[in-house]
Image (cartoon, rainbow, N blue to C red; front, side, top):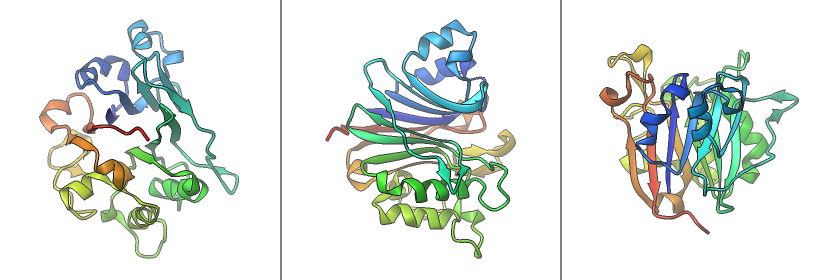
Length: 239
């Protein structure tokens, strides 16, 4: 099974064909249009098997799959003390494993923006996370950790590790968080402003099944988005 995450930087209806050449079984796409409200018939045809969330029909979070893949939306909570967190899209895949699509936001929160949103989501749903892949644009890296808060990037990574979920990139590259040599974002599409803010986290027994892990190259993708796609292929993920 091949899974891809990509922040398409909007207008996915004009870009999905380029991504389709990678032939994934599942695509987790940030900043994509809601297919049900799109007027692009070709895009709607491609998006026959999907789930999507968002407040703006032109920029939401979608999970798209091949027709034979079963996506079951999971009723996990997105409320932390009556405040909604965004965006997190949990689903069960083929009744084999769970996948949480991620596109963190500032969410008008002065203290819990971006990685703070993921920290809150973990507090609500951590007990659900068994055989779970957490994948997407976290908008975060440990280089931005603040020493006086307990929900920074390193704290979230630590909490995930405590339940057996770790970053595939860091496990396979043996690089530390914040010391990445391959980047997923080029701010303002400039090669001299690279960051690593997109991730695929999962259980260690999933890592053992990885056949291929790759981050897209700048020259291949920068004309389409400031983010690079992450491609992860597994030999199998069935129970």
